[in-house]
Length: 172
View (cartoon, rainbow, N blue to C red):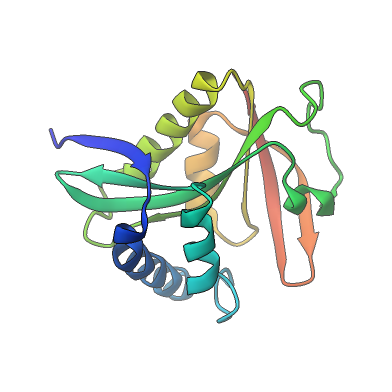
């Protein structure tokens, strides 16, 4: 079994992260998913800023960056666009939101998204957070399957001008 673990990204990881994000963008396009198909998002500045804010994480497999994502601890502005919400709000802003999960095409098919999800659940528990949220584009069936397989439940829609996605929540 390959050694796989999660760590915070640093600027030395930027080129690998950007390559993975670009590959994920192409994969989504091949799947006819309109997610990440504009040059505005995600872009290099967004990713660079998230790394500098220490919000971006990389999954390392056998010494290589194999996956990426970032987290928001507390209030997430994306959820200001939530409609038809059935989210459990009993924890207020004490929650974690996972964004922009991407896996390298060199590691596709090895279920590394499940590793990322598991590692983020562990990270939430280490921060004493019980409410974990994630959202994905309405057409991204692969990610929806992974999210639901992990135990998240659908709790509404995020409707922004350039993005419509399902919002999920897991209480642990």
